[in-house]
Image (cartoon, rainbow, N blue to C red; front, side):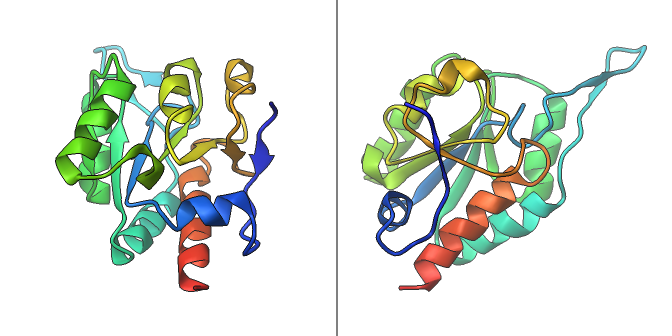
Length: 174
């Protein structure tokens, strides 16, 4: 099933899902970045991120929603960005479903109380389970069959901010 764009109409499925969310998982590459990498001669890497995302994540914190980067990659740039944004980060994740299940159990939450924003096949298992599944506008076509909400903004260009703002709008409208 094709993804539907995020809508904050009071009766929308998105709005109903948002009401339960306490934990938002965020993929890094392709969601917080534009999926590009700059590789320097010495092997160091750099990525492009949107500064917009920081304000969105701050807004979520004010609503007592925990956000956390969950990434397959292990890269110092991910840790540095997470630290700058003030969010926790788990890297080198082979099984995002198992990691998120453990996080939910530790917090006494269930899958309906979790959201996740992803962009590629390694996010499919989590997106199929969470109560608020979201993909970025330029997500890989391989996950278009997953029923998820979709941002209007591409990864790395403020997609996380768009999601955070929509979540906040729904909660603040109550």
